[in-house]
Image 1 (cartoon, rainbow, N blue to C red):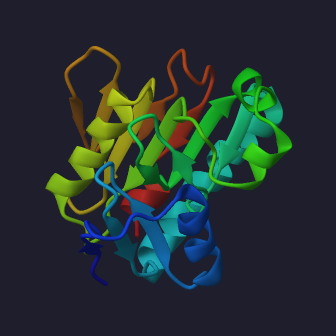
Image 2 (cartoon, one colour; image 1 turned 180 degrees about the vertical axis):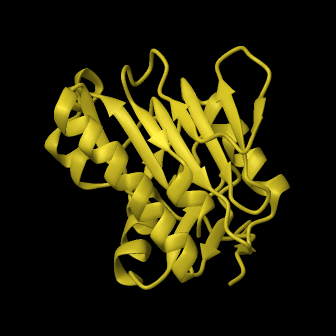
Length: 192
């Protein structure tokens, strides 16, 4: 399971064309970097898929209970301010920001950067590339991001105007003031 990046220097896809490309090829996962290059990702394997599901369930339950925002799974596209189209493994935005979107904006790739993102590293992911993606999220307005790395049981925490904080084998993560009261239990992730 490898990711491929296609340089589309001579072909410029409009946002609508990129959206249609994704809709017409639902068996593939596409992202587009800020240079307009297509990143084609294969489906995840069983361990990563299971872990992504556990993360989404925990975030979804917390969000249902608090009603503070809207949570998204890994198939949701976000159009970042720098022009990139990204799909974090899990994301969340405040209810106020969601309510400010038109129904058309809600149906397509969401034209804003999430408040919170999670990326879960799979065995095929380059750590450097996923770290660059996390920094891109922060540079575009993410307030809190977690890069969960089951390979070495570590978590990199990204926050605005702060250095990356690395935790070794944490059992839980706190949503801090961005997701008040949210605690992600990592025991399910580490046990895969």
